[in-house]
View (cartoon, rainbow, N blue to C red):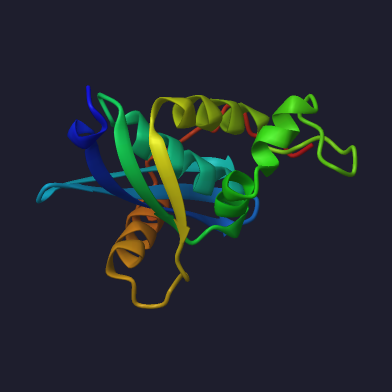
Length: 160
């Protein structure tokens, strides 16, 4: 497939927590060629950062073929970890950060880095709660998932 034939998809993501740790959720909006898909789910006990990373994973997992992706997130944790190369450094250092402490959310970072090898993803930070319509929608989806009471277990969350 020639580069010109690669589909370009816009993905907006957000994670939320009621307490941190606490009940959490994620929201995702995918936009392609006039089509729209929304995703969300809630978890009983997790952290805001886990939900931010999981939202990105869930959005990218929807793509059935290699795509060029503009990924919008209000999470500096996610955007900086990718754009500044921190996540890849953590991985190459056996999931140790520069200060030698263990990186958090390794299970999710492993999934995300694998997905990033499959697609051309440009991470774009957007200011949260600043009238970005799609970011606000993701926040609504994440919070609604928490409030639904239909919460699942974040099996890999550990308070340690």
